[in-house]
Image (tube, rainbow over all chains, first blue to last red):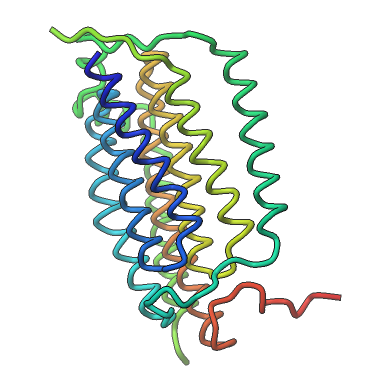
Length: 166
Length: 104
């Protein structure tokens, strides 16, 4: 039961913060709301016994990506107060699209997975330890792992080339 | 001894909500940095799905895919923010609505 209580507390916080990300009229607040969503997701992974993904989410998203966003806000000299109007004029069509998508996905999910349960037990915990994740990456996913490292290198070089002043 | 049941759908519905919020943000925001923030929301929704299915099917591959998505998200934010900086430098504003040279 503790897992369910944790889920709902986190879910309410994440949903509220997600709305904050897309509705906030202060760009720094939007980035800070995103950090709440990211921390909530990391906690959800730990509730689901995916400890390694949770910690990686914490380090990479909150440690790196959130800071990168704050730098981006700083470098584009966004107004720091509540002055900006950051929405364009397609707000209502966007809301219709999002609600329609949510309705369709919800109907499909309820139809497809009804009341399926995830059993969080010791066997699942033993099979999703960090060691198991490492074994899986370096046995079955070693080629995608190398490809993704090349992609990171390309993104690094690409970001420098794009943002360079010459 | 750990024994608890959670519904698969509660994770999937949370993820669907986050994804749709991200879709709304991408469509309705004008500032480039805020559009990228909304894209991050969508990527996180996908990650929650992957980890939930990984626990549901007892197959650890889902977690590996979540790790790959996190890596790609990091690369995407780096390149995306570089592009937004370039737009800001050229147009003196990070508003994506002003990038309309192809408009008829």
